[in-house]
Length: 42
Image 1: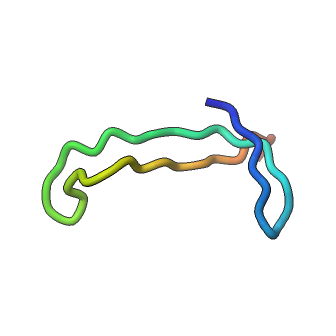
Image 2 (image 1 turned 90 degrees about the vertical axis):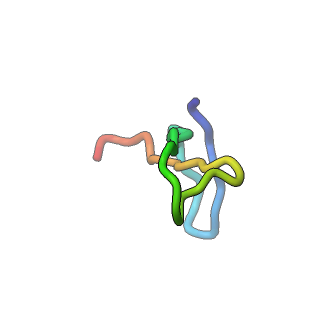
């Protein structure tokens, strides 16, 4: 999902992803995890 976020460093176009965590241990599923990647040329 494309999303624009604003943080103290500025406003950025991002792609928001939700990884599928299937393992147990420290990554045991207790809620949702999201990762925002900048949507730029780099």
